[in-house]
Image 1 (cartoon, one colour):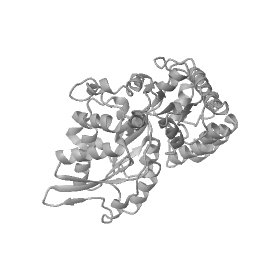
Image 2: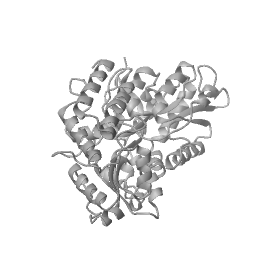
Image 3: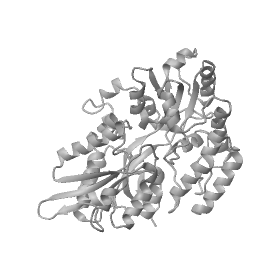
Image 4: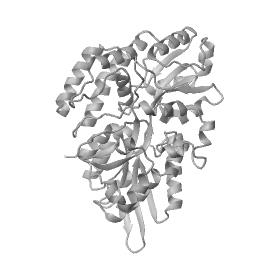
Length: 436
């Protein structure tokens, strides 16, 4: 049985259905034109076709790949991030599996159990070492299953504190000294609410059913999603303490009890001072703040005496092709997306973190970019304390995450459910579900 050893986490976006794959012949998701050397493959992406930088940036990547590889046609197809696993499983069952899939890390463990993923090292052959050289080992282990890399990191981010410097000044706070702890966030939020605005919002009740922020809070409070023995530990004392701190922001009127989209709209209007979310929204926030208020960012806060331990979110790239010609084309596509040029475009055009350290200061890639784009610098400085994303094991891993988010996190943070009893009940159900 395939089993995920370590993964790093998930984020954002919406899209359409897997309509293009369904139009391919049974068992095929693209076409290899024998004799012409031309190959067509499909790419399922939850960023493709969406509004803002995520959508336009993905199209820019596709356009650039088409320039570099005119012998390969990539047919993109959009699917909502919350549906990407179930839609892909349905496409596989129908004999219309996409060739390359962008899939969130919260769904990766179950994907390895239920999808015909390919070893990327086997597809790359002698090309492997030179292609992945420069990607930090922690990112390579992101998609490791049974000792083989089946998913390369694609769009990766960490939770970050975005804040409205103008509202800080209005409340008598120094925007050059943003809060670094949950207690300081609470104090700043009180001053901002007293000045007539909403204080803070943690986007932990993620509509994409990702638990990267849940894990970030629990980790930073000294706990973890899964214990050393492999069992679910979401109901530990540390987890309870971390989520009680977030619930306290809501019950005290410092955090609005609304969904993420409503909070994002509130922040864009200049009425919410602090918004804790994935760096993946940095481009969207920049666009909304332009001409309205000064937008700044800070690192993820501490929840105790130790350093903050945020968890990665984002997605990896998997190849599902069984046809050898399409496998070769799919590898060329994945190779480009994870190259120095690909990661540079992903940072500039989509707003995700650069996953190759050697491109950050290189003027050929991102060396000059960060001089004018400061929002990503605080999360980049926190990469040393980031904890790997933890995943439940087995074919119902994603179902367990959805259960955690729907039955525990949202009721606790937004609807004032009792923290300890809610976590205990949900943890018990998760253990029964995944056999941990």
